[in-house]
Amino acid sequence: MDQYIDIKVRVWRQAGPKAQGYFETYELKHIFQGASFLEMIDILNEQLISEHKDPIAFDHDCREGICGMCSMYVNGHPHGPDSAITTCQLHMRKFHDGETITVEPWRSRAFPVIKDLMVDRQAYDKIMQAGGFVSVNTGGVPDANAIAIPKPVADEAMDAASCIGCGACAAACKNGSAMLFVSAKVSQLALLPQGKVEAARRAKAMVAKMDELGFGNCTNTGACDAECPKSVSLANIARLNREFLCAKFSD
Amino acid sequence: MWLKDSSIGRKFVMSLTGLALVLFLLFHGCMNLAVVFSEDAYNMICHLLGANWYALIGTLGLAFLVLVHFSYALILTIQNRAARGNDRYAVTGKKDGVEWESENMLVLGAIVIGFLVLHLYNFWFKMQFAEISGLETGAFDPQNGAAYVKALFTTPVSGQIYCVLYLIWLCALWFHLNHGVWSALHTLGWNNLIWMKRIKVIGCVVATLAVLPFAVVVLYYLGVGIGMLC
Image 1 (cartoon, rainbow over the protein chains, first blue to last red):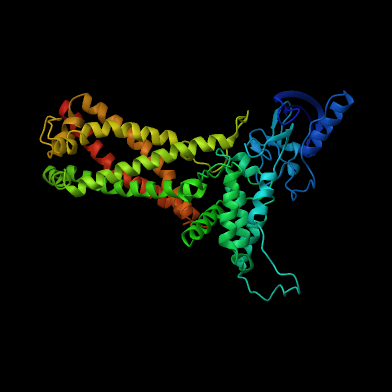
Image 2 (image 1 turned 60 degrees about the horizontal axis):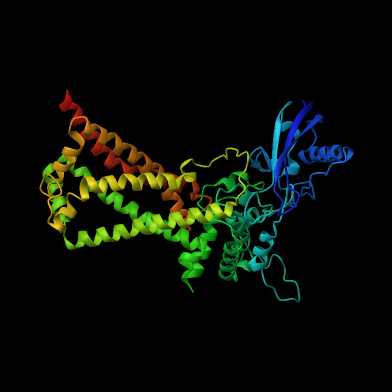
């Protein structure tokens, strides 16, 4: 049964991108375990505002696990100590009375801190702009069922497409590598006939952009796969390697 | 050049050089195993490989592979640490399914290279190098490999210490390969959802096959050495 608990929250505070960050610990009393983690942060912020202190800046939007905005490193795990969920889907029942919860922003050179727990994840958008799309001619819309796609292939493409671009993979990776993200985005299109046309150009462009933005080199440790809120598989990275190497060798 | 400028290109070089070195280890291990069965057979192999032109080309090739593999490892690690950024996490949780060895490949590799230097001094310097240079660097004939193996591993006390050192080396090598082999295949693109588990098993089997023959030789002489002590 969910109970009311008293906790301490140790939060990373950083006034701006260039400012020196530090940890500050806040005490919170009477937090219902049925509350979501972000609701707990909301309560903490209300408490801070009532004390005339600066509230904690953090990213959030849909609060139902589909937008990829929430981005907290909770107790050493991106999206907290539960598997296959985003921070907004994390509940206080995962914590116990008297616990000190450490909350940090994503830490990666390619994701600079904007303020407190908010990081700049435009790097992922730039990778998408480099090639994460299918070019189509405008005009009449072709029938969706005109091209037959085997169910297992469609499923695998759909699983790759479940990536919400939250950045947990690069945040969890000891190498700061964005390979799981890039491989999911390459895979979701490379698996389908509409995306195959530009597959070689896409793989080369997205990998080049990823390297340019300062992400690290993948060493297949699998921390990304373990921490991904959408359980995107490491197998996608093998597909990206395959697509990229084939593209390079056919040049 | 994409083999050095692209992240996947650099990993491709690591994979190829690594796999080539694994093939060499399998070959080297099989040769070594002969000494357990027949010292004459082993010396015949030493004679065949000695300072012949093909063995010398092979040695140069190996030196090149080790150099490329090691320098790329350093470059990749420096780049990866930079990509991680200056601020480290205050708390790092254990991630399910992440192998310990995969996070410590550079350290394991450094241990392997460190012992490799000792190993080259123990054997290569007294055998192939002695043959090329014509210098007398060891106590026995350069092609009498079995005598060197026996002397190193069975001389009372120092032999047993060497056995333990070599076993530590082989352990580090096994852990390095247990991640390295499947990771190399994965980087080459030879993996998918179905093969993920299989490829890890293949990696473990190859790592064991590559290390086991060496371990058998060391354990055999450890037994012989202890037998001599008794």
